[in-house]
Structure formats: C-alpha cells, structure tokens
Image 1 (cartoon, protein in one colour):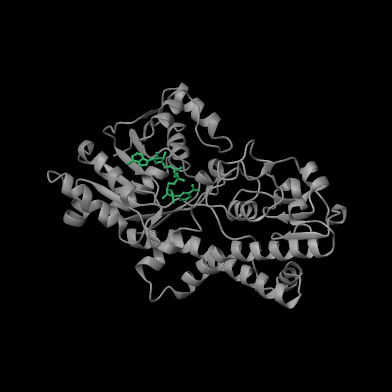
Image 2 (image 1 turned 120 degrees about the vertical axis):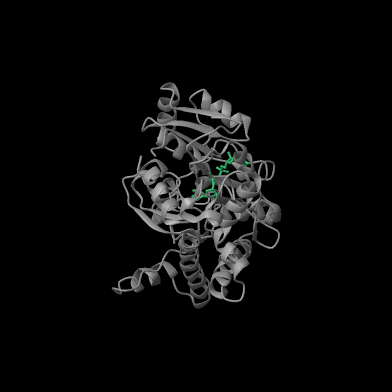
Length: 420
Ligand SMILES: NC(=O)c1ccc[n+]([C@@H]2O[C@H](COP(=O)([O-])OP(=O)(O)OC[C@H]3O[C@@H](n4cnc5c(N)ncnc54)[C@H](O)[C@@H]3O)[C@@H](O)[C@H]2O)c1
C-alpha cells in the first residue's frame, strides 16, 4: 500500500524538516505538536526554529496545501514520532514524551498504519512503544503479537542529521531502518524512499536503537581522548594542537580536536542511555562522558590562573581586569546555546570575577537571561580593544579570521587553538 497521508508527531528540529520533506513530494502531511505557538507559526507558512533552507520548504509546502499543523492527532497511513528524549535523575532516559506521543496517536490508528519512532531512544524502546499502543488498542494486532500478519507495522528509524545542514543531510544520508519484523522494515523503507536519495540499510529495531547511541558515543569517546590529551599537554608544556597535527600525519591515526567540553542535546546526552542500561560494561563510554563533562571546570581553573598571572604582572586590582569570552554556542557558526559548555564557562567567569565580563557571540542579538545582568554582549572589536584577558571558547569563523599575530593581549586561555 502506498502512503497517501503522513503524520509527524513533534515539529522541532527533526520533525518539521521531515514533515516538510514528505510534503515537498506532494504527500498529504499533518504535523502534530503540543506547542500551539509552533502549530500557529507553521500554519502561517513560517518556522519557529533556525535551520537554513527550512523556511522556504515549509512556506511552499503550506501554501501548496500539502502541509498543515495541528495540536490534535489525525488518522494517517504512517506516523513518525520525533519528540524529545532527554535524560532525568541519574542520567536515565526520560521516555515520558514518547509515551505521551504514542498514547495520543493510539485512538486514531487504523488497520494498515505504520508507526515509526525516530527519537533517540534506549534499546528496547520500540518494543515498549508497541506495548503502549497494543494496550490502548486491543482491537488491533501488533508485531509483538502477530509478527508479519500484524495490523500495525512498527519500526525504529533514527535520525543522524547535522544541525545547520539538515535539509541536505535528511535527503542524502543513508538511513538505518529497524523494523520489528521484515515486513515492518520493508514498509518503513518504502516510506523514506519517498524523499530519500541515500540508502535504506535494514536491521531490527534493537540494533537500530543501539546504532544511533553508538554513533554519538563514538564521537564522544574520541572527543574525550582529545580533551584528555589537552590536559596532559598543558601539564607537560606541550602545544596540544601541534601534537595532534603531528600525530595525525600517521596514516592510521585521526585524533579529533579538543575544546571547552561537549555540548548540545545529542552527543552530551545519548551515551548516558548506554551507560544507564549497561553500567557494568560501559566503562569507557561513562569515563568519556565524565572527561568531557569535567572540561569546563578545568578551563575555569585555567582562567583563574591566567587572571592571577595578569594581576601579578601589573598594578591592577581584580575589579579593574576585563575578561572577554569569545563564543557561547555549543559549536561553531550556529546560534544554539543548549547544553553549551561555553555558556557554562562564561557564566562561571561572570559569577566569580569581580571586574567586567565581556561576551562576544556574533550569532545572537541579546544575552540569554542566565548571563544578562552579569556580563555584557559586546562587538568583537570592542572586546579586542578593551579586554585584558581573552577566553576563546568557540571557533566561530569571525574569530578565526583574526590572525594570532594580530592579538595584542598576552593573557589568553584558548580552548580551541585559534590564537595559540
Ligand atoms: N536536533 C538534532 O540535531 C537531532 C539529531 C538526531 C536525533 N535527534 C533526536 O530527535 C528527537 C527530537 O529532537 P528535536 O531536536 O527535534 O527536539 P525539539 O525539542 O526541537 O522538538 C520536539 C518537539 O516535540 C514536541 N512534543 C513534545 N511532546 C509531544 C507530544 N506528546 N506530542 C506532540 N508533540 C510533542 C515539542 O513541543 C517540540 O516541538 C530527540 O530524541 C533527539 O534526541 C535530534
């Protein structure tokens, strides 16, 4: 059966681009979100998040009538669930959004519907979702009960797009398809092939769930290695950037770059899902998380030591010293401050320092409430001319455009190797 109507539950950074991609292939798409502001904005043909090219695709899709948004679930041939999966308590996955989303579509499911979970989830989440649906709809059969003959097909298909390049990667990337049965996988592949140029790679739901967690844990562990090297090199008086450049000349070595820590809502979160389920075995993955999470604290100590050096070499009082932080986002050239280690460091500096803390972040127009009042958003030029101590936190292109030789300040903490 081909898919005429598609419903995407959760219209955020993942769900909205996915809904728009189906709609641009002239499928009737209804996006569902509990946030009325998101729903109203999309129905005006506008977007409530920042992602290049998304505004144009959504505008066209809404104006041509293929995409609309609603707060109320509707019957559809296929459902894709893309709601948040943060962690709670001691870093355990919080599946309450997925549970609520599944329970909200259960009443409108019909024989032949396909349900796909896209949210990053712990192993077994798809089977759990299938149980929630089956409990709500005893009149229908599900893959855990009826296998290939089930009325409802269910699959786990994770998303691996890069924020800032979502509209390209959504279509070009290969996609892992984890059906609860081979029929579920075949139907999920058929669905994604509506817009996908990459390949559908088929497996089962548990492997697909673990695959997504593995990809982000791989990145986290490798960044932790670079971050640990940066600590060792600082102690040994070695330039870690030069060291990594040299080591990477080995044909089988490819070390990533250190930084102020790891942020965002994916790499800093997803490895914990593995640790929560396999605490005994996941020792390296846990340690990597701890190494990356402790990096902002180490950077803060570097800042304190550098300010102390600055004070010792001058007749200034601490309250006369101006510290400038360069960058707040969790990675270069975006405006996303969620879980950003740069934010955490800037906040700690502003709280600790008795003098002025200046912040340069070319991608925002005003400081977030947490920093406003404590520090001042200034231009790059003002920071370079006024500050005594420079703290490089994010390698935005504007900062990299300034050659290290042109930086007059002597007191610099450079977590990204831009000027030192
Ligand atoms: N953003 C990324 O780069 C990225 C990449 C890969 C995977 N993921 C994963 O995709 C999932 C979604 O992430 P996101 O960044 O799009 O989140 P988001 O916060 O941008 O969007 C989620 C949306 O779901 C809505 N929502 C919450 N509960 C709902 C419910 N019961 N019914 C309907 N809507 C509901 C929220 O209002 C919000 O608009 C998460 O599991 C995330 O880990 C995200």
